Structure formats: C-alpha cells, structure tokens
Image 1 (spheres, helix red, strand yellow):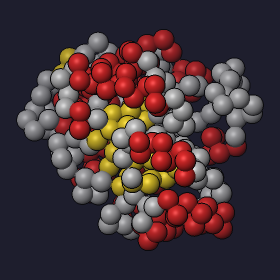
Image 2 (cartoon, rainbow, N blue to C red; image 1 turned 45 degrees about the vertical axis):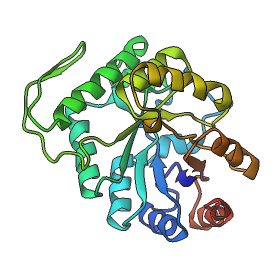
Image 3 (cartoon, rainbow, N blue to C red; image 1 turned 30 degrees about the vertical axis):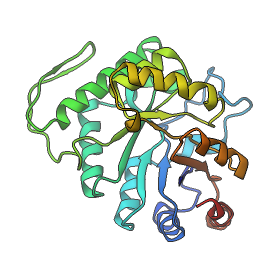
Amino acid sequence: MRIATTIFLTDETIAPVRLARELEQRGFAGLYLPEHTHIPVERTTPFPAGGDLPREYGRILDPFVALAQAAAVTDRLALATGVTLIAQHDPIDLAKRVATLDHLSGGRFTFGIGFGWNKEEAADHGVGWTTRRELGWDRLALMRALWAPEPTLYEGEFASVRPSEAHPKPANGAPRILVGGGAGPKLFARIAEQSDGWLPIGGRGLGQSIPVLRKAWESAGRPPEALHVVPYAVRPDPGKLAHYADLGVEEVVLQLPPGDETEVLRTLDEFARYV
C-alpha cells in the first residue's frame, strides 16, 4: 500500500521544499495539498467538522505554486491537489496550470477535485451554490477538450471553448483525476463517467460504499482494475490500514498537522512505520 500525506501548508508551517525533500527521503508516496482562496470573515456556513473553523483554513498556500516547488526538488514524490475547488476557477486557465505542472513533473500530478462547503467563498467567485457541482463537471469536460491531442471543440451548459492549440499537454494525455465528496449514487455515477476514482475524506464506511461505487463503475463499462479509491486525511493505525488493504485500497493519504518543522518532522517519523 502506498502511503501519501496531506497538510494545510500555510505561511506559518514547514515550507513546501523542506517537506517535499523529507517525504521523499523517508519513502512516502506523495503530497496532497488542499485549497481555499479565502475565507470570508462574515460567514454563516458552518464548519463541516463542527466547532470553530481552524486558523489554517484562512492561511493556505496556493497548492499549485507549492506543488511546483515540491516538484522541483524531488524525483519520485507524487504531487496532488486534495482538493481543487474546480467550480471556483476559470477552466481554461486551470487547464493550463494542471498541464504545465504535470508536464514539468514528468506525469507525477494527480488532479483531486471537489465542490466545496463554504457558500460565502463560492459566492465571491460568482458560483451559484445549487449548481456548483454541474458547473464543476462542465469545467472538467472543457479542460479535457484542451488536453486532447488535437484541437477540440467543447460546448457545455456553462462554458465553451473553440478548437485551440493548448500546450503543454499533460504527460500521459490527462492527469489521474480523483473526486472528493460524500458517498451517493449521483456522485458515483459521475465518478465512473468522468474520472479515475474517489477521494473519500476520513475513510469511514468504505466497506459499504466501495461495492456500490464498483457497481456504478462496471455499469459505465470501466475496467475494474482502473478504479482508484484513495482514503484521504486519514488518522492512521495498523488495524485501519489493514482494513483498507482488505478492501483492495492501494493508496492512503495520512493527515499531517499544520505545524512548524519540528512538529511535522516528528509526525513523519511516527508515520514512517506505515511506509
């Protein structure tokens, strides 16, 4: 089982370059970085985990800039967003950033996408809350048109793009695309149609959810071995990881604390026993 990590990198934490080097030296498989462009102070949307919103949410580094630094100082470490809030981006610009990072890193990028929980943040981006998922899927389809080998027209519900020269291309045609979100038939049908797998936060209930996802996947005509289920932001213990392995999970993303070098490196040493 591949053991990757995620962390809220901020202006107060360990730096991306130091973290990436330490991860690769210890044999960790990858680094996933989350995204929030900003957190409006006047917010009525409750924090999904309950209680007060942790300080780090309003201080997150741009994941693409941080991952580019990580790519430049490593050779094997996989790089990923966990997750890009895809509805909050111009898809033409985002397609370029994704393709460039994947190209420059030699195909090491995984594009983790999601649809967000913060209504006020989305509203500042002009995103309608009830249509954000459809908007996000539409933007992903437009991005795929720009990654296509030949200039490709895309006309969607929310946006379109003319047949265009758009280089560089992702190293393998498209990056691996994983989708975050709660288990359900609508999400699983879309995952099977437009992505490479699921990024479930916390990893609870996978014994019940994975068979449902596999059924949707096979109904869409996708080969079973091509499905990726990657439990994300996991607090590890040997029993939990053994359970994931029994379910056929091949990669797990462990949650690191949003701390300084001393705290993060100490946690890496604790987690190294799982690598």
